[in-house]
Amino acid sequence: MNTKNKLKIFNDPIYGFITIPNVLIFDLIEHKYFQRLRRITQMGMSYLVYPGAHHTRFHHALGCMHLMQNAIRILRFKDVAISEDEENALLIAILLHDIGHGPFSHAMEHSIANDITHEEISILFMEKLNSEFNGSLTLAIKVFKGEYHRNFMYQLISGQLDMDRADYLKRDSFYTGVAEGNINSERLITMLNVVDDTLVVEEKGIYSIEKFLTARRLMYWQVYLHKTSLVAEQLMIRALQRAKELTLKGETLRASSALSYFLNNNVDKEAFDEIALETFAQLDDYDIISAMKEWQFHDDFVLKNLCEMIINRNLLKIKLKNKKIKTESLLVHIEGLMQKYNITRAEAEYFVFKGDISNQAYQLKKQTINILYKSGKITDIVKTSDLLSLKVLSKPVIKYYICYPKDKL
Image (cartoon, rainbow, N blue to C red; front, side, top):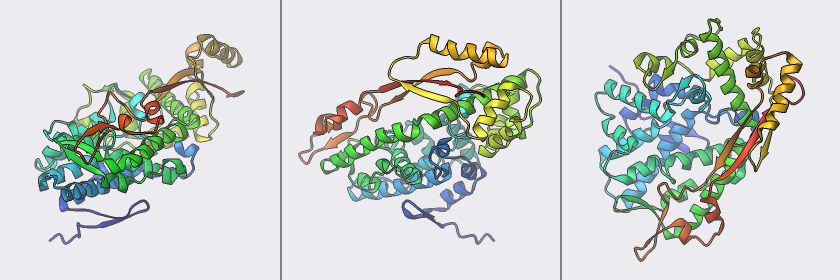
């Protein structure tokens, strides 16, 4: 007889004790697909800038579930009807919302897996788990996809004021030590309400929303789009792309069997079958790091140098500009590299490239954040707030970057 206690408590550094509400959620957390998130860093290469940023997707998922428990309790207190099945669906959907993330979060999506997002892989994992758990995730999948008729539930999972953002801003602020991102997520949740199946924020929560949006903008510029972690992620993407290019040409690279599968096969959305999913489930940060530790001694000039740069944190120089980078600026560095190291233009372009980043804390065209007045009137936060900067926060700010070697590779 199985006497294992399935109603355990986690001690979280952000919220204190997090309780597992039922046996199904315990079993999902215990599952190998979810346990893999312990080996996926939450913030990609940001630890190269902020040494404390080593927390994982596992931490984040549990934090989101805890905030969702609070949100459900608050909404029920305000007479919003949420059945037990709907509660379970919300908790499962937010718990598994990041289960499809690959190693170092977003690097996989732009290198060795093509045209498939982590959200799409999350759905594939959920559907597989649903068959294993006898259909008990069916409603959660509907909510996650936004197909359930109660719109506020989807907004709690994926909206401008969802539990995902409420956790990662507070958590990432804590682990990086960037105090500007520290939001009061508990107060935000206390201010939530539902009108006509749409999420709203009560009038007294206006200033908490202003703080939340300002914190989000600052965290993007200071942390998520920090130029050092940006160039490190670009180097990792290029290292994986080069590894795949060499493998498809017949080179044998030392790598784990899971990583080798993705290097040897062009896996896109159409080809992401059950074998690809099971192999993906074995892939984590350790596969990539251990492979790069080997590849830094490879004969290939490009792969060797890209991996050395990441392992030893000897990164490319990166400059941010307000105007688009001219092609001539790239050519100067490309031609210099070609002459210095006797490499082809295609090889030089692995080390010299440009791109852009965008920061928009509040997206007017997406689901809006609506303020509920005591009179019953509902207004968008931008029209309600007396903070002029909110109008600015709703406009995308684009910056352009150029990367090239500092002096020598």
